[in-house]
Length: 422
Image (tube, rainbow, N blue to C red):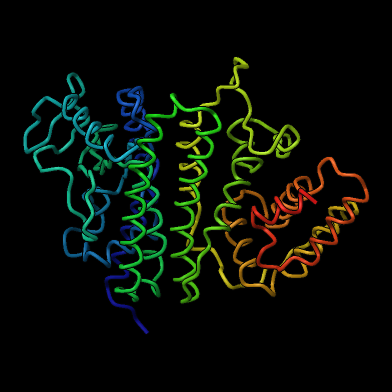
């Protein structure tokens, strides 16, 4: 059966993008380099990133917004205002306005039509005659500015966004849970209420994080770590509670499990290895929860920087793919006797207890290896915590108590602490 003409239009537009992707990519790179060199040195800036719309995103937008009515398929990608997306990321909500004002100061030469360019940089323009921030369809504010850049005699449109880490985090959740999921998109009232609740919580988190960041330098290292753990636990709990509700229709409290995940993240996760070059379990051997010293050996670790970089790391998680409620299949190799005994307790319960199963789905979504690799790292971490410094007799007693522990309580911090004291 012959398809309607719109599909020919979409395919033509996508082919134009494919044929000219090198030009779009180079223009985006040049633009990113300029914005990074101009605004990257500002203390509030975390970084500058860019992306080109994919074929799938282009198809969705053409249909969703009826773009095929606007111009020919051969020029559509050149006419779209956001075919290139550029984002300047900053630390907190308050930094968004600060950076926007810095942009207005820099783009100060009137280029006509509401567009402005920097001094001596006519190839880059931003439309600064519209009020900012804009109000989105979801009711929340966003700094979103249309622009254009000339590269190799071709003009490329782009959309510049200024977003705090929390707002970037929120946008990824909303995009992956709603716009990329047709079934969830149909649950308008329920999902919108839940997402609004998450946004309100994250707004509070941003305010608290900002206060903590500003005051970190005057606190002890121990106080900084406690504050960091609390903020991360709060954020994870809000996000994953909503995901569990969306996937299962059940509202449960996972705050204790969020605490357990955060304890792992800050002690020996792949994040710690990537961020600080510390082998996965080295930190455990020198004392759980104690982050490595600064380069000068002072021990004054910058928890503010850890907070910012860890939030950025968590933002890359694909929350839409978390299979809450699905069975977990693992292929675990032979382990040393003690670790094997610990692993068996978890493996015997991982698909029979909902809370333990959910804990590992959350854990696997946050870690970077395969599920098998992440499970082995967790077992090593858990074994070290409950057996460190014990005689053989105490280890046997600990393993016996572990086997009698309720499955839903196995990963909790209070359980690990109790087993470590036996």
